[in-house]
Image (cartoon, rainbow, N blue to C red):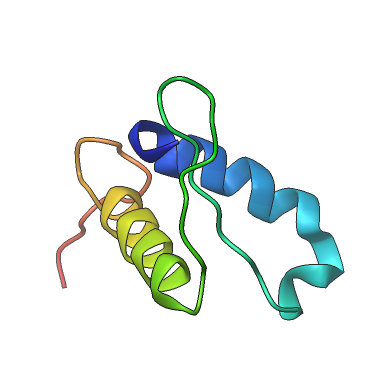
Length: 69
């Protein structure tokens, strides 16, 4: 779900285990629980990875802490 990219993304990526090196297909689910239409030709994966990275390094999530130096 787009509103839960960090939570859902980490859950699903952790489930992949050693298959993380394989091709990852991204499919977004809308608020009604239905899959969003669209073909992942790399664009959805890039969008997912960009959103996941932005959320991961957002100071409000406190996953990482800035240090001096």
